[in-house]
Image 1 (cartoon, chains in turn cyan, brown):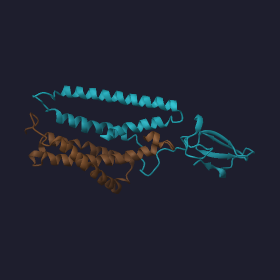
Image 2 (cartoon, rainbow over the protein chains, first blue to last red; image 1 turned 120 degrees about the vertical axis):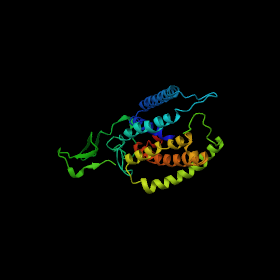
Image 3 (cartoon, rainbow over the protein chains, first blue to last red; image 1 turned 180 degrees about the vertical axis):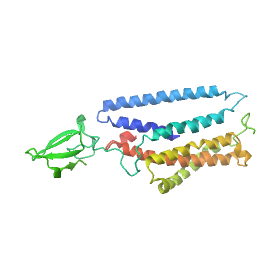
Image 4 (tube, each protein chain N blue to C red; image 1 turned 60 degrees about the vertical axis):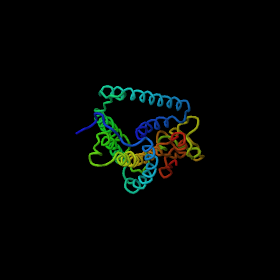
Length: 164
Length: 119
């Protein structure tokens, strides 16, 4: 069933998306995520085999015995997924399906120089961008709004811009 | 109640299993998309995911009914139970669970990196 794998993709997607500016870190993160995935997959298979053996079921030969199968189904396909997945879903933002989840502007993904949706190049963080526009300087330090400073040093609140 | 000692069944072939899943699955997928759009699209992410996951966890109950032969006791054949469970219910709930998950992926993909992250 595809549903189990979805719970893996959400943290791995967020993890890898946070290091897209550097391909090296992206490769390392992807290798780490895939390694953990394979390890946990193999581990779950081994645990499942041990549980079947522990339950006393005989799955091969003429004297097959599946008396414990209903209990295993209830425990490991009904109860356990509920106990694990329902609390895990509380980690998902409780927003409407039409709302945005991540403010990419605040995360520094939108560059101020070309005003496009491309991420900042050369690892330059959009949180620290200084732009000279001839009138004043535009400073952006750990905030997602631009504040235009006049040449006399005063701040003009009316000229506050937002990077889109 | 006689169960599981040397239980005979389920009384359908593997070809029937593949055919039912292959034919009923896409049809139920289209129906579930329409149902999701009508009833679940206005829910919050957390609510709809918890609901669909709880429903999905009820899917093995159909398998349980087949294994325990309760369907035979109430006069329902194995083929019909497979049709209702694996064929209809699983695809219905699976698609309803997949839609909000796909929506979440589309929202957490960084701008300009959608194909890289989503692929």
